[in-house]
Length: 275
Image (cartoon, rainbow, N blue to C red; front, side, top):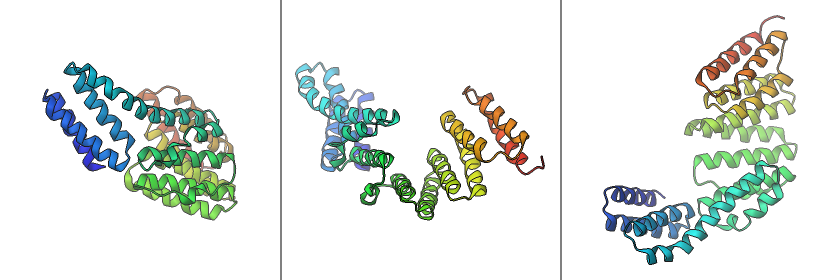
């Protein structure tokens, strides 16, 4: 919550000024607010601040008393991160299992755990898990809408999937979340392609690639370039331009990213030229 974050900030400022009693008080206040909200993240950060004060003051017994609670909170966070690793490796069932206890929580950790669990359920097959999800802010709402789009694709309802993705895209743009814009445009391109709307798919992928280059996401850019190569190459010039663009991606240096952006502009122009 905003109040808890302000208390954490006050604690950190007091700690930096070596006002240890004040710092401890603010960290404890932040934890109290966080417990009322069942917010694991803020609880963990507040407890770490309190523990830091105890160690600075040489209060070893106090630090030892705080350690088990810190361990329990950290384990929750670790379980979620390990589930993300499982999901990235394609182990959807294991990822779902890891967050099984977390999805019942009402804090921010529980919220992202439910999103992860639903995404992996949809990877395994049709599911209505996204229908029961609700958002605490616009960015989370956009992620939920993308999950609902995935569920619609699974159900063969491409128009509904398009509506959810366009709504998510608008939310990401309002919030200035460029990574979300890039991912949603990529997904929108795939839906358009599945619906037989190749011009719409190519346009979405070109915009997705531009957004990926802007945030310097090489993995996303490579994936989208592959989609463009498969479905949107008009002639040999455009194919060669895409190859040059892809060749600029492995290096994260500014010059190479600039080259990739230039190649994207060239590709877009060449698509409409005669062979």
